[in-house]
Image (cartoon, rainbow, N blue to C red; front, side):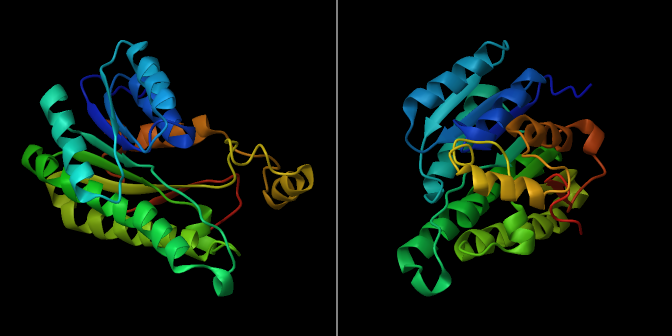
Length: 249
């Protein structure tokens, strides 16, 4: 059984969807968790309560991941409250879908800044305490879109592909200090966004997925929890697909 007792984690975008499932799973395995959220305070409070129900400490901090000072503040809050930071999961992300020829500058920059630059800010902020401690786990939530591309999502695909590069470069830089850096690439997962898709679209997704179904946020969180554990000490620079076989590389 994965045991994160005594560990302290930071999760960006932790109030809903995959991020929330990761927050709750890490707490279930014994970790204290600090997480950021953009604006949904009620969802953040509900997630915080779910962590505390596991007997773990929780910090819910509102902030924009595109602001480097927000990343610094989140790390500082975790260090002040927990006394350590062992885990970082970069889960915050948005979409602004359109065809390349119609995509606005704002839509491009918003997705790149949130999904990629935000992960860089959080990683940079957390590395100093991890390097001092000579231990740490960094997990980035990328996507099958970053591996195979997705029509109508050039900005999202580019950001998620960039996360793969960030993951591998970070892994090479810090491996000798006992810090691992990996990424999880979900396929089509049941969230608030996918459950409202028309049934014909959902059926097309199921047909394209070898396992014939959507994934769940809990299945993504399971893999993240493993990568955050001592059992994954010799795993770094890897991109783990949780996609039902949609992308095989």
